Image (cartoon, rainbow, N blue to C red; front, top):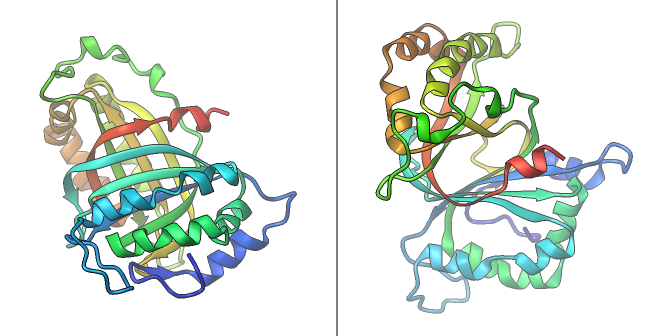
Length: 275
């Protein structure tokens, strides 16, 4: 990230120190979930007149060499097809990078080739949220009744292929400061039955241990769910049983959220979580 604060978000210095100083015995893999909002036209700090979009500038940034050098790998990239819930920020692309250790994320920032390429990210990015995450232990989607997508009511078609639905969640706090995931669990017990009939497969659910870059908000969970088509997911959204559970439980549990339908370009979330 460099020594100067980036233009595209607030750095949580406390979490940065944790990433840099976690002892070897306590360290381990961390999944960095990136929400990205691009500038319409790239804006370079050196004053050059840019003729490329913010997304094109971010594509130039692509720090594959630096990631490889520290043993990190990109495990998910998806474009936002539709944002259903959230504030006025409409995100453009989501990416997840798995780092072998927390410290390796910090080490990458100091690599000369990373610092050189970072000018393109700075030019292209309007806003970003980068959350350090750990996988949650959840039942695999193969346990659901309709794991075979050819048997679901809305299978994939040429015009409506598989989607990944992303939920970024901050739970409500009680007066005692305790989070309220129990309400979410009550909602899930209903929603999972409905979603499984439409081909739900879980790519990965994560707990958020810190937000290294963001807007000052804390987040608690990030969930990636796969469906055979957008139509399949929208059928889940419209289901009256799920809607009742949403009103009874989910609305009580959640203080803040983003919900997005993504068209995945690359998805290997399952593989690293199962290692």
